Image (cartoon, rainbow over all chains, first blue to last red; front, top):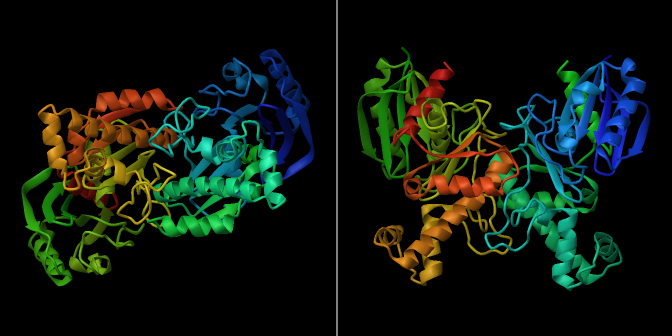
Length: 290
Length: 290
């Protein structure tokens, strides 16, 4: 059975584990804080890889940032990682073949291969975290686009320049549907600049009517974007993944989306490939290219 | 050289011509008014086909409405055609194989095969007419989705229920970026309920400042939607087709879109496959499936 040493490099943590061709994690998951300098990141990656590369057929890396179509390098800057991160030549980190893919694409592939979207050819996995990521599967293939950056959920939800997105443009879906979007909706409704996502969710839990209103508006923003994705892609299903997805009501969202679309009904599902979907997806994608 | 008898069935006109495998129209283009009853439509189609089917290898039909993935039937109703239109069994209209595809998909395929997007693997052709249609080409393949309806440009441009779209939902891009959207923008700006697209474009032509303002807002709506499509698909190019595309400034739009996207620069191009792109595209798609 083929195996990958799979890494998931995020802005705050790096995970690593051996994953087999069935998408099963073998042995322990290693966890590290993401170092604050480029040199330290490189040496941490080298350490992780040198310890395990002899046990596997390929090293696979799920990472923030857009990854090129050769799966070898990052093509666009990644705000939450150190400067110069996109210059890392991943191929030199191992004796083995190194396969790199964007983390949201990797998570989407895990949902497609072994998770909630397993029985479907056309799926979109939307990762609702601090920001919004996505991976799009069309006829069992990952949508990459001309430069590998496809799946950026930065489509506008307003013509009126209401909220500036972290990407610099106005009114992207990300700045409405993300955790950050929930917080900003809380600021809009309450006028409290220092309100947190935690405050809002704790309020909802405690039955606070204002916090429930904030949550409902935010969930409506999610629905409004999903209607567009369902009409554009006519997918079998849309999988909601990431920390913020745990709070949403997929049954209600599915009902609302299908009421508004022109295409045939789409399923809205909770992710099921787990917290390590990034590693599992990158391993399965990488092994499939061997 | 293989040939198709290609038909383009719209709400007001039916076109027909013989198209060869190079995408060249051979002989005259036949033009008919679209009959107002289902039986008359069927008999018109039978007449057109019976006259020419012996000269060709396949009959291909570009039509309004979503077409299934078997390219044999229409799966969703088409507002501007007679009731029951979607029940037509196209396969019975000819002794030859009959291949059916949506008209905007067919036009996009023509741009991909012989038009403005010819040198690119990933393109989106947006047809700006009374409404907005589109066809999406990914790695030289037409995006169909699970039921054949992919490419519906009904993604929301507002969270605030500002304009009702003809599809019944609120604030779809179609109701902002279409010819109908230009008219409604004219109503918004001038307060004149009976203003027409023609009034607005004649005013722009004559140097009227208010009409120029209406036009600029409308063109901004087009840009706002294209930013999203460029971020979602990372395409090589987006082709603007249809009667309303003749008025827009693609150079300006390209500059504005590329200023706002996260992905690599996208080309914004005028369509070049001509007024009969629907017939040409359906013929080339159909012949490619022989």
